[in-house]
Image (cartoon, rainbow, N blue to C red; front, side):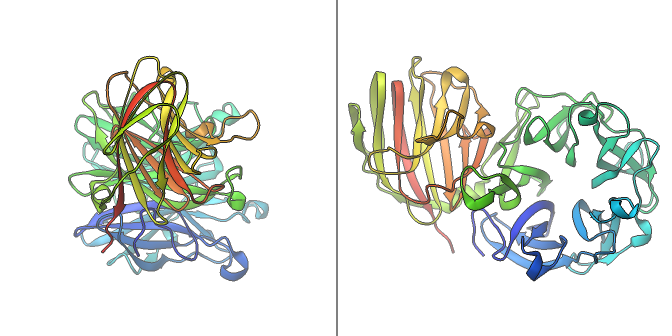
Length: 475
């Protein structure tokens, strides 16, 4: 199956548990059919393979859910590691029916395999949150790694302290083991009293820094990261501590030995319209993670994805408002006290990449692209750079009411006048991912306007656009 943003044909993709071996990323993922009548209750794990994040091989269900009376009716997030010739999965066994029966809702559970396709569950290895220090129903998302310095395996967990302000009890719990079977619960790895919980913890080292990745839904629904030179902390927040927007969640990372990637999901919206409530699960989005000289992380499109877009289309811009000057693939306008826009043509039905180098003057209030618009640019989605506010946002035009279209979509970015800014816009179906300067990602989802063209605009300022429109060459 070829998809820029993968989803199973008969359901939706949620949390991804990545692994890499023999030149292939093997992505275990939680599958949700959203059809209990036909598929029953619960969440199993499926397996997906890819070498380029465009072509995917479906291996099918590999870790089946338990029955209604079993702990792992819902197999929630976990991790995978390989020791010698044996693969180990540690996962969350979740049963929403258990609390009413006086049982603990969540447990850490264990399974092993020789091929990643056939797994043997080890129910005897399951363990629960200790009642003396943790809330008993929040004990999930295990991440296991070998701590070379300590000479033991460490497990990080999304947990909640038993005491403290109710909405600030979230912590990253810590367990340790010598044999991956018996686990000792230790003091929390990190308990900052910042969030309700820290979902899907993930940890890796790059250079001199350790990075802790986690997702939250209290102050913001995003994937955060913290950085430290030691596993003992302190875990420091960078200026921009999120990998993406509200539309990229539960990201976990893995490396192919040279590059590290973040695997998250772009959520659907209830009722398939722009005002609908965000849902659990959606389409796969993959970012490549890059480390900056100060240790901060940035993200960009994977090279294999970018390289697929090699079929370039001619661009014939047409002015709608303002006095534009057009050349081959470029457009310039001076609009110091008004709005100017130009129409670029229809968008293709399939995947597309719009790439632009934009240079604006110091007085420019905003500039950018309009997607899925008409020839007058009177409707559509605005990808808007706002230099004075140091941000990029997604907006809808016309907008209903006085609430900005998508507050959770905005991303901080440094925008300097007279210094070219590069935008890469990837669009396929409902999913849109924008990269700024190959450093900042802004994912979103588009429903209400399903087709149309594209255009560019400048509001109260001057700008030059150099634009390329590319489509993928799918083999």
